[in-house]
Image (cartoon, rainbow, N blue to C red):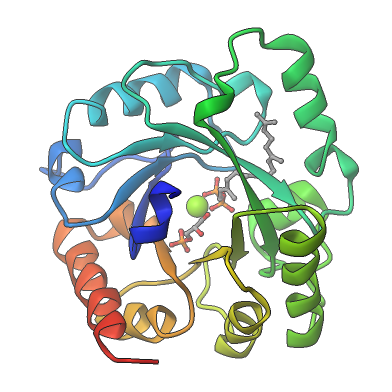
Length: 237
Ligand SMILES: CC(C)=CCC/C(C)=C/CC/C(C)=C/CC/C(C)=C/COP(=O)(O)OP(=O)(O)O
Ligand SMILES: O=P(O)(O)OC[C@@H](O)CO
Ligand SMILES: [Mg+2]
């Protein structure tokens, strides 16, 4: 079974951002989240990535990197795995297979047993990831559902990721993706900032990803989102 089949919540730590005063990576790992993903679109370097991985790898929570390109991949025995984005609605094929081809060509240390892909559907046109990948964000719920189906049925993806980085998304789009999937796990990320927003997205997605909140607000706020998602999962759907 894939590790993420049991997850409800991920904290995504951006190596280009700092933690609030007094907050440590140990605190972040102890929020009750199921996994730490380390990654961001802008300003990430191998050194910054390595620093965060080192800081998190000694605690009990699983740690994955989510690289934004070939040059920021770090290999570390403390890593549980590599989550490699594949942006299904990218405008530039570099973000569908191009960077992946370059990685396979250049990196001779890829550990395929710990390497997993995430089928991203990027929906916030104002996010850096949308600009970077030239994503077509003008998608209605039907189109999102179709991308989710293509990802699972035609490309064998185990993870579909609805990405609204920076803003809380439309639940109709998340629900449509969820309905379209059979076995694949649906990740949702973007704008989750409190118990209620986590509870709402937890009703539609299998796993809720919280990013900026850990950098902007800190531990109590992240813990509230863990509670929100877990409470949503208690209610039969
Ligand atoms: C083949 C390899 C090793 C990598 C390819 C990676 C790909 C396809 C990257 C494209 C999508 C991307 C940039 C993913 C990184 C993870 C992500 C979506 C982070 C969220 O970034 P934002 O929150 O939008 O960015 P900032 O916080 O930096 O503004
Ligand atoms: O930073 P936020 O808006 O929480 O988004 C989380 C994550 O989906 C970003 O990749
Ligand atoms: Mg971000």
